[in-house]
Amino acid sequence: EADIYQTPRYLVIGTGKKITLECSQTMGHDKMYWYQQDPGMELHLIHYSYGVNSTEKGDLSSESTVSRIRTEHFPLTLESARPSHTSQYLCASSDMQNYGYTFGSGTRLTVV
Amino acid sequence: GENVEQHPSTLSVQEGDSAVIKCTYSDSASNYFPWYKQELGKGPQLIIDIRSNVGEKKDQRIAVTLNKTAKHFSLHITETQPEDSAVYFCAASRIWGGADGLTFGKGTHLIIQP
Image (tube, rainbow over the protein chains, first blue to last red):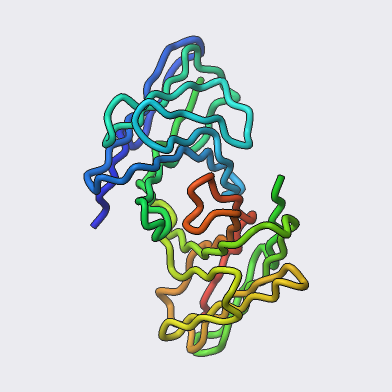
């Protein structure tokens, strides 16, 4: 039973639109992450957070931004979507004891 | 930064046989090596992990081995079953649990033939 939720599950949107991908977890985890998964299944870290008011950029350059105002919520925003943003976006969280990541089921984004 | 290489990209085995997936990493400071299983339409799920001061860890039919000198680690699945079919990812990080972000391999599609 997943305790980390991503919405929407699928999204098709036009070029230039602003979108926010939602991620919420009910486990009280302090650390949260966003990964981009390309069609070949490779996972790339784009953003992470150690806790409230903490955000860091990951290894993959991304035009997206994130915020962490509440422990349980870590939304990702694209100000102006482009076809190159078409991908699956996976959110994950982990706790202070660091027992590995719990991933959400992902948002599959298509920009047309 | 860390670079993780994973082989093979696709592995097909007969049900009941063993499967081995291998990974190498580049950062000698890496200390944490988890393995994730991703089924169709779902996010990756942690199946086993190992830290650098341990050479081997087992959990029922799965085991992970680590050779820190050679900077490689492997996943072993014995007595494979149809439900083992999935994409498997290895990963590495400097911090236990991957607090600063995990670097993943490119994944292995494991196919269990009936």
